[in-house]
Image: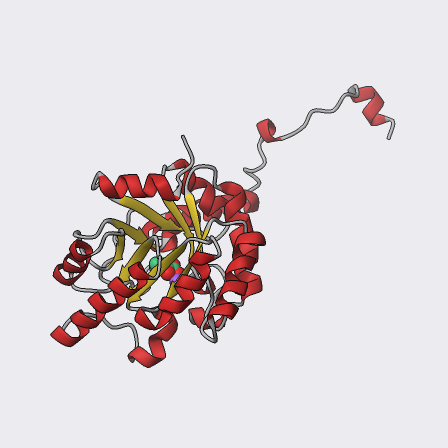
Length: 279
Ligand code: KIV
Ligand code: NA
């Protein structure tokens, strides 16, 4: 397929065709997402939890993001790629943000960057886009600010909060963002914001009225042990944990019983029995 670009995303948006986006954190997870025909692959800082076992996204370093972005970029031939700017690498000043964004592009080899925040980040978004780096904005529930938000809470529920969301959306659009992720917002509010904008909204926990959808790959694949908490918006499309567990347990059992390796997994030698018996 033809590689997805800023222009083809624009054309999907104009045709009102939903934009499909999923996270990936390494070569295999990007490889399969790219083969499945996703429009956008995001190297989210959720890799802190899903790939690195950290408590939350605030722990992940730019260097770590760069390593994961590079592995995703190598596997991605068709999808448009985005790398998250980790917490602490863009908030101090627009210059700091541009420096970090340049590293994500040059060293991470992805095609655009994502950062969290609304109106207050407008000068930063403007700085980065002016340098020729496309920016995906992220408003609503912004996980890097979970401590200030009082946890993972739905945003835009009441009038003041919904108005702030709209204000943020318009500001990041004005600043030059090519699209905006809207996370954990009531469907009606996200739809209203979508209608007010002239750039695509990519929803996660934001209902069916957005211009596209994004999910964290390990969540939608069911790549975790049973009983783990999942946000309401996650639909489990697979059972990768169950399948991996089944396969690894079968392997373990067959090694213990010497059922594996069988003759078909074994190399023949090029000596006669007589030659071999000389040893
Ligand atoms: O880090 C991430 O995976 C994200 C998506 C959930 C949008 O930011
Ligand atoms: Na993120």
